[in-house]
Length: 325
Image (tube, rainbow, N blue to C red; front, side, top):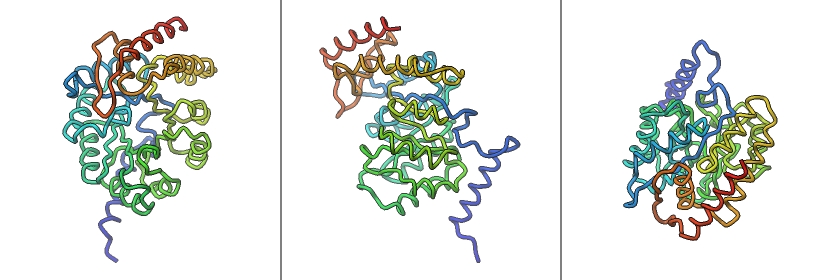
């Protein structure tokens, strides 16, 4: 019987995976790193006062996050406001980071509601040296059938060779990543894992239990301890403002020490900052700029600017956090 195009692509993908493994053994389902327990910051995307992407500020942010201890960066995730940028802008943002990775593990989110643009952005990230992808499901269609999602992701896996993570954030996308979908993708050697941004402890634990060979990254701080205790990494928006505190948790863990004290210091710092309701894109970027000692950067509507009252609260919180060190 004649081999179908889909089967041929699947075979080619499997062959590519074997080639990528080389003499080192099985394909590493961990985004090219020897360790799964890495700390990725879900980086913000800075805009200037005219709401245009600011490449210089982006480069400064990458350098700052590296200096403060992050292991990697997710570009154009939810915290990176990916729906607020055009395809051309998203390419420029990715190129800006990938041109000088500074030794960081860089993951790009190419996801859109349609497959052609998702594939275009995925190939662009791959061609410019991304270490992996974090692909949000096609959103807008409320809870599409698993069969349709399997076909969508299969089409992507068959045409992209770098590691791919599925993005589980149903509160925003309205499209959950199910265990059934993940099992269907297991045949692809470049399936790396997921990011679980639900914050649901039971749901996250079930992902870890059912897919221990993947990197089931926690996207929320409340599941961080569980992730580390089970050899998994994390992608944290908190990494923008609390980079050093987050990095200390991972550094202590990988050194074989008791990371719980560092985790508590991180939690205490976050609590201080959030006690006055200080969160969101505008306040986050303002707090980051204050820590970096650089100019304020901005976010696009519909996200709101930081208010004067929030600025006062943020500065007070930053002073208090410095006293806690």
